[in-house]
Image (cartoon, rainbow over all chains, first blue to last red; front, side):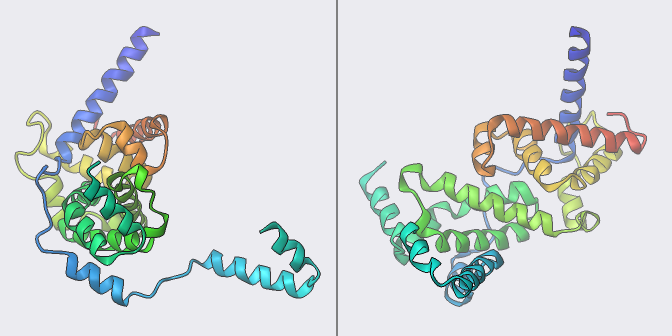
Length: 80
Length: 181
C-alpha cells in the first residue's frame, strides 16, 4: 500500500514537473501594455446593462401568476 | 486598513466614480496579472481586465468592504477568464502566439524534451476549463490553494481534487499520444 502511494506521489510530481516545463510562469511584474482606464470608462458609459434571461423568466412567471390568481397578490406581498 | 482606503471602499460601494477610478489605478496590474495567469495571452488579458472592471463597477452595491477589494476583484476576474475559456473551442486555442508563449525556447526544465513540452502544452489546452484554471494557478503559478479556492468560490479540498483530476487527465492524454512522462 505504501509502495503504491509512493508510486502515485512520484507520478504526480513528475507530471507536475512536465507541466511546469511546458507552461512557464507569468512574470511577477507583468503589466498591461497600455492604460486600460479609457476602455473601462467607455464600457461603463456606453454598454447597456444586460438583464439575465432567468430574471426575465422570473418576472414573466410572476406576472402570469398574478394574472391567473389575482387574489394571491396580497399574500405574495405579505411574504416579500 | 488605513482610514483613507476604508473611505475609498465605502465611496465605491455607494457608486462614486472617483473612488472606482482610484481602485482601478491601484488594482489594474494585479487583476491583469491574475487574468494573464489563466488565459496566457497579454492582449486577451487586457480585454478581459476591462470586462472584469466593468463587472466590478456594475456589482458595486453588492461589495462588502469588510472582505476586502482584492479578493473580491480576483474572484470576478477569475469568472471572466473562465467564461472566456469556456467560450473558446479547444482546437482553436493553440494560436501561434500562445504556442510561442507556452513553449518558449529554454523555458522550464531543460531535462524535459522540447517535443514533450509541446505535446504537454497542447494537452493542457484540451483540459476542461475549470480543471485547467485550478491546475494552472495551483501548479504552474504556485498560488496558495486558499487563494485559488477563494478566487473560484470553492473549498481548498475541491481545488486539490480539481488539480488531481487535471493531472490525471493530462497524463492519460499524453499516454494516448505514446508519451510516458
